[in-house]
Length: 534
Image (cartoon, rainbow, N blue to C red):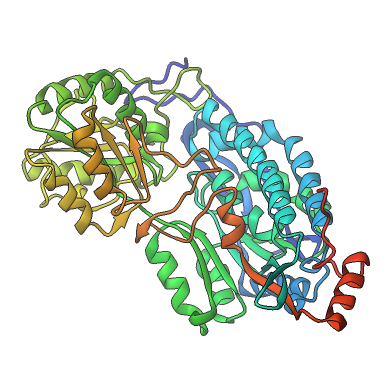
């Protein structure tokens, strides 16, 4: 462990691999940016060459303008060419070869990307390696899923005297906007299925976790035909907004906040034909029944509320505890939180790490102050203590509807706790909520659990029994109700989200049957003559 302590800053560490990115990828070219650039800082404080202590300069990225964004759009549009481009009409096996090539090249940059995950967004070492490896696995799993999908489609069906060959086809041009908290994994869960289905894409990395994409620019460039993947850098208002205003985007793929999704949709002049693939915010609750195993529950609630400092859409952001056990739970849970290790991301065993957003500690303090002013107490001794880049997790109780933390998705190390007498109390809160992603239910009595599951399954999209909310495994559906999501992401579902069922049909007669037989035996159509043994 490093010597870092609450209230102090470790100036002994150095970042020696500064990246001043001048390149971006458009139309198959790694182009050199000659305009303005933006510095990228880590919220990890170190001492610079002048002896000044402050945020660490990691490098810089292009601060691109509207013209560059439109160039990227034009490249993607040209590559798709209204469905006539080389990429959307390519044989499945050839598209998959491109993805396999990319995955192989991506693995060559593992250590550099992991280092940037730690410095850019403060993710601890174990989780940074996990994110990288999980992303590579996701690419290979998506390739295998598409092979299965292709094999299932490799046949003609006959209904009511009509032969039909049904497959899934691309939608067009995709605007891909990923989140800062999982800038690799979550982003690629959008980008990879989008392009594998034959779409072309414009990808703008998130504000935080942006430099870690730069080592992969060359891999994208060398793996895909021109215009299939176009990567640009800059602010959303300069990049995403003008692209949407053209009306040429067919799919908006975004993981972020619902306000951003709505604002971008509103810019599109043809919203009726815009496909949405959105992963948005959530206020996932944990419901702790009277007979819950508190040892197990506290362990899972620690992970659920504070994994990656609570900066996950799947984090538990409200705990409902039955009044008969709330005092015991609070006492034990608060002590468990105070035992968590704070350190720098690369420190072995560091669970809590610096926050990547410079303004987040102040926001956390505002939530705590508001709750305390309205009757809540901070139950753990270290709760809310600050450094320049870090706020120690605060357990707040009792939380009421009058408090801001009750309503807002805190997306950080604040844990609101409410007690309940009647199980309908947390159910009513969930029903009235604008969100509906997941819930964690802790208990043992199946006579209580059974009816609860029936209700909860209609309020959220995943009910976790005696376990924390989470995204994975990636083969399971990942979606939400209300403001939490549009469409479904997983290895299998994402392929469907970024495609549409399309087919060739012919009446069952000797004339058509002769043509179909010849078409199946030939290699004249990549749509019909699929690779059965992929």
